[in-house]
Amino acid sequence: MSNVSSITEFLLLAFADTRELQLLHFVLFLGIYLSALLGNGLILSAVACHHHLHTPMYFFLLNLALLDLGCISTTLPKAMANALWDTRAISYQGCAAQVFLFAFFITAEYCILTVMAYDRYFAICKPLHYRSLVGSRACAQMAAAAWGSGFLNAVLHTANTFSLPLCQGNAVDQFFCEIPQILKLSCSDAYLREVGALVFSVFLGCACFVFIVLSYVQIFRAVLRMPSEQGRHKAFSTCLPHLAVISLFVSTAVFTYLKPNSISSPSLDLVVSFIYSVVPPAVNPLIYSMRNQELKNALRKLLSHILFEHK
Image (cartoon, rainbow, N blue to C red; front, side, top):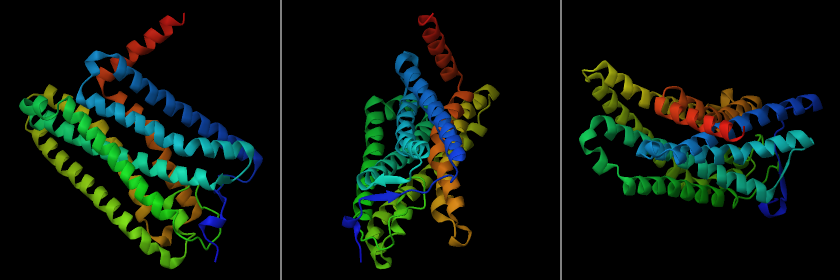
């Protein structure tokens, strides 16, 4: 029986077999990656450079942009390199790093989205107590808790996953090192080691989901009771982008990990994992800037300043 110590590299799943399609995928991935870098980079710059955006909501949005950049940078550059150089290989250390970083960023992002729901709940439902409940110290503590939860979850899963003996070769049926696909390579009786980490992840995920749902039930009840149509519109304009991001994130991730084996196939797994790992970081900046007038104005001023400085 071969174990993990005898494996020096893993083979990732290729998006295409022909050279022309590989280069086409490289160009497509490069475009998506650059758009994610540009969109999230502009949000980071706008929030950092404009003093009137130094509020809890935009502080958490800045954290979300950082996590989006980390998440997409963990998976897509290696996929682009493999497509460009016509290879499938990733080193053992590189695979472990992908597992750790992806689990870290994806967990921390989910926790930040939960904290953002908390922020919107107090801003809309308890506006008189908002400043006292969501101050700068509380924001820093909540952000640190989100990043810390991601780190703890990543450590647990990475340590458990790479301590398992591998009996089924080294071919990973995914375009990056994803935990469920690596577990398929392990011995059948070794899954019990993953139970502890899985219980922690399920508990954290369910707790965050319940908190988000309860927060938005209270938010929508409060918004519908507002007498002013302008007030309702302003409240919805700050909540709907966040709700759209959560829906995209949760629905694709849940489908990836909870879909029945009867409809599972390598091509479907590949597409769905691409959607939940790559699409949200690329489209989140667009979602947040579409209905947020303050952010749009800040981005417009930032772009005008950049263009003016380079003339």
